[in-house]
Image 1 (cartoon, helix red, strand yellow):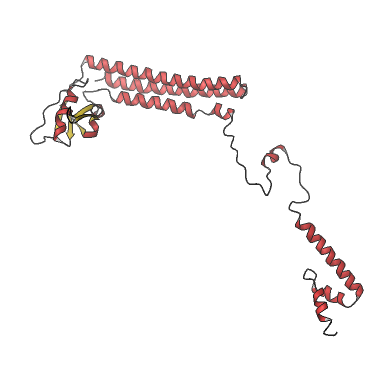
Image 2 (tube, one colour):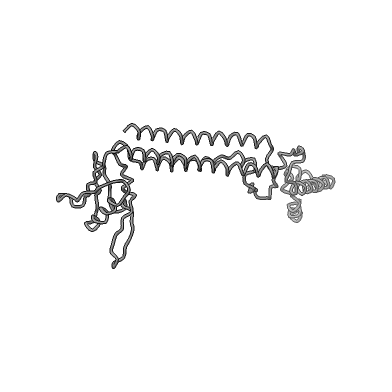
Length: 280
């Protein structure tokens, strides 16, 4: 073979066709024709495959599959519709939260009551103290913000940080409704106000029991209002036909169970507090 033919032969070589087939095709025109046909078929197949991105056979998508089906080029879509009406009907988190707040308020109010000749330090710490003068300007602060109340037997020691606070704090304690008589600070502790705790009397004990009962009734009313709010939402779902009657009935039953549990907890806490008050 002459040198002038080699470049043309080289130009005919196709990297997609095996080299042995191409070399055999170079010798005869018939083989060269078959080689050209093979190249054309290979290019056609490659062209067809380049536009195919899905399998040839697919199952018919069911109802559930159609919801989850997504195009390869489309971004994932999240469900932004939020909870359904059925979910909201069964959701008792809001009702339970309101009941919990009512119970916490009841527990706090009962802890403020005197029992057994003792007075909860937080009662004194919650008193309002008026600082300053008319010329300089008056300021009302919480006693617990400028003093520390430390119980010691039948005595409360109100420990201050500044000498100028002794007089206004003493006046605030004496003017309270807790029947307290603060004493003058001792010479060795000029920033500590001793406050003797008087023993409970029949009147003070009865007053504490009545206060406990009122706090219990207030907690029960708060739970009743929370139930009414949730039940109103269930009735609206029924009128709008957004929830099936069977689901509404189940949700209502669950609501009543939560409410009953809340009332039982209020009763248990109140009865425990009353027993402590009556036994002293």
